[in-house]
Image (cartoon, rainbow, N blue to C red; front, top):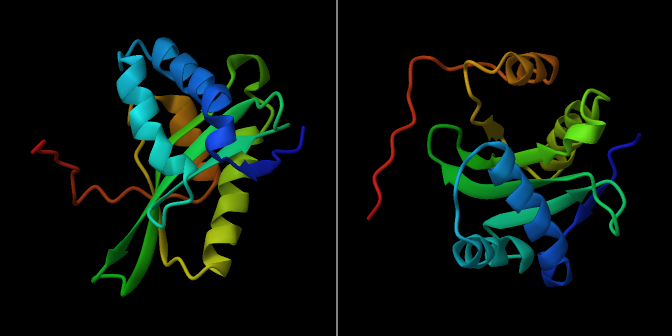
Length: 149
């Protein structure tokens, strides 16, 4: 299967929201539907700081990837962070996520991005293998910390 990437728009809200709900259900995380949809809208409005891509056929996507963008003094340029990447269980193990990350890397480089970040669960062996295949490196000298305001 080829990992076709299609930039999602507001017309794809229901389709994408269904995939995101599946992600949260599979990961046993809770995110109320109204908050999930409100948080998803900027990804679909072609805002300069967020984008969503459907993976596979637009009418029946097999996954999605959510990206956010920023600027870094240290890299003297723009960076991209994968907020979420999800491939349905039934089609995993076929190299789809690997292909998506490689395509995104090339696409982002051509748009002037300097760095591409991916947060990963350090205990998930499949995620670690995916990161290795797609040449993501761990920077263990830093930890991601969070404070809600």
